[in-house]
Length: 250
Image 1 (spheres, helix red, strand yellow):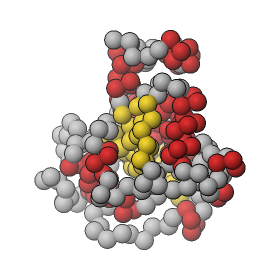
Image 2 (image 1 turned 90 degrees about the vertical axis):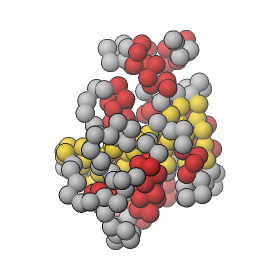
Image 3 (image 1 turned 90 degrees about the horizontal axis):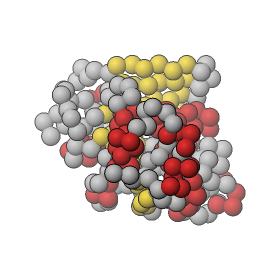
């Protein structure tokens, strides 16, 4: 089944030459619905490069408006967008890349009352920089067998990990690694700062992890990718839990 239009084949002509983008794999890409929670320094480049990679369905979730302080790292936005809703502007600009990409939006910050809006997603990406939201999303993904990708950037440092909640042999989730019930005292970008370049790198790595995972290009499950933007180092660490997780029996 051909799920791409002639215009899309022209847009992605250089990409689709790659042997990894077989007809079978293109059909896989066209069926994935990726939920991105947080359209900020990570969510902007992530969504852009997913669309650039031939992804056909994306759900964007964010209740915030664009502020001038966003512009150094949230690359979908510019001065003309200040005061506008992030999801509306992001959808418009992503569709300028590929008008056949279906962009669904939720103009609200995610919480327990609207999590069901993500029920049709193949994978949910946490790009919120909010620990409470991270824990909520992780639990929702475990309970509903939805794959989950956690991202975080502070200063020049990034952490990214993908959890496979669909075909589970051994349980591992964000709660296994950080079992605390209360919010931990972590530095956040509004207090310690954030490099726009490091946020962009996190978005690009997250996009590649998702492509790798769904096209079986490399192992991505339960591998924590950490990077120091200043030193240009990237390390992949195999993660195993030493804690008894509250969500294991869910």
